[in-house]
Image (cartoon, rainbow, N blue to C red):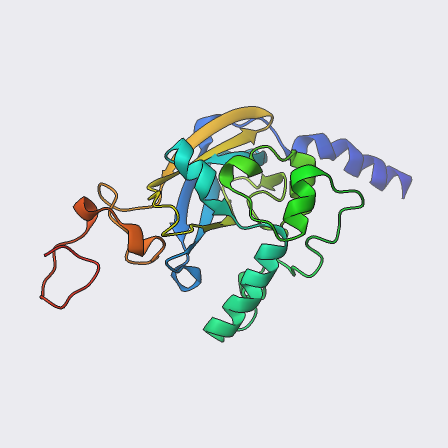
Length: 236
């Protein structure tokens, strides 16, 4: 038994080996049935094209502008739990988190033994802008999201395989008209910092037909041309 355990411990350092940055392909897509004008649900796919096990850890998310970072929220903590409950009611497709295979949300916001500052507010259901999230220490982020969330913590991608992580964004359309075209992602690959800009729109920024996030604040120059006089969300 001792020999077997010793062998396993010997292998642990080899789980996350140093693969070149170009061997990890990162892409993003939206999940239409979980999107609305106010909410954008996105899955980030990490594909390991190397022969090594690659350890990744998400750092921060940045949007197109400082104004967008200060107004668009990343849904965390209690708000994420209640969004899930409301989504279940509106879609009638069962529990969203269960459908995605990313765990339950019941304990979110209740795991903090002595939460302080922004962490305490998020646990109580206060919104978190992208700017606010960047100030939360990595060690605390896992207490605000379930496993499978982009901010939950580090993960390892097996050789020649892919893993997905997800994130839910909220845009208070009307109070803020910061139309988002790209999501910037800062990650660490085996301890080395990498940055990627991931487009969430099509063409020059036109909205994706799959996800209706921010449909009410699309800039006029990006609206498609109307085919009929009664068409909406288009320009005549």
